[in-house]
Length: 160
Image (tube, rainbow, N blue to C red; front, side, top):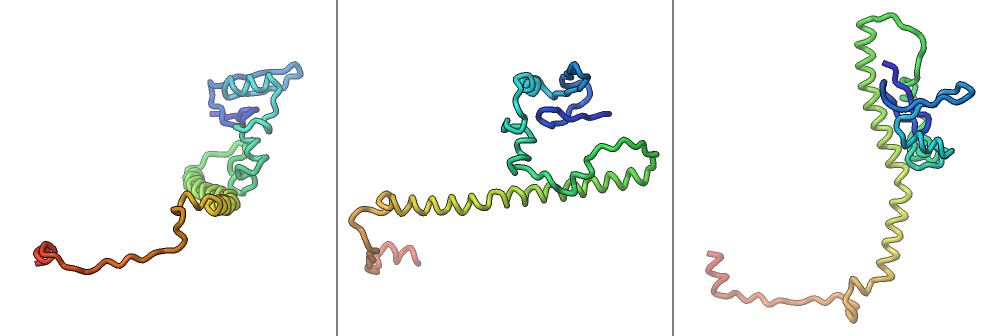
């Protein structure tokens, strides 16, 4: 089963799906859906359209350089079928998938880290500016209220 990538958004196209456009110079463009085909006909640059993988890669939203992507590359060499090699490969794919997901989570965490501190500082500044919404006007200090410890008849009955 041959899986190809969409020319516009880089998503996977399965057999029997998508649109194929052949230009006059015999260059083949494959699209996963009409949305990608229409954007191509409107001469839009995929790196400037926010929902494409190329935009996300160009703007640091997704991981682009990682050793786990080496396993996904297309190889045109025919290999002789060997049951043991296939079994080991399938085990390796599961391990690589776990490693990739962990690295992606770490990448996202590192990408969002500076924004977290910025948001905290903005919230702190807003709280200082709008403190009257939180604190009642005229109250500048904490006031301790002393409650006398008188035992009523009801409390004594409940304790027993």
